[in-house]
Length: 181
Image 1 (tube, rainbow, N blue to C red):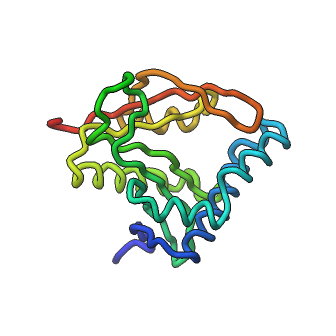
Image 2: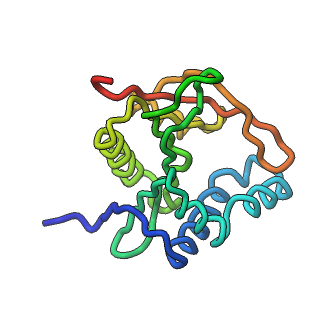
């Protein structure tokens, strides 16, 4: 019997962009609203989530989106960026590095293994693309996400600023080297 979970590559179209905008806004708000001001949250959400914003992201050739559907309902997604310079010294070639810019799972699906399934999909894609490493930024205060990434072998290699509205926060940069590279 097959699982009702389906992970697929996103198509660059308006309906998908609208779904990504809604889910992105919802999951970001669910995760971070309690620890940030309403004004900073509103500014960040307006700058980063909207059908036109997500359509432009979908159309960018450097981005790949993996969508997680459960019985035809979008319940999570990952936004990936090819050739990411995140965590590299200035001037170093970013070729072969895949960045997880977003790994979002709807609140009511957290703890079900959906995030792990998406991560396995990301790592399989990184292998197919012959990536040397997968990198990401995670808020230093997001202990749940940090523990999740550590279970998959990601290790801290640095930090950088993350602006949420007017609040400048610190993201930890995590890296996972890919086997044989």
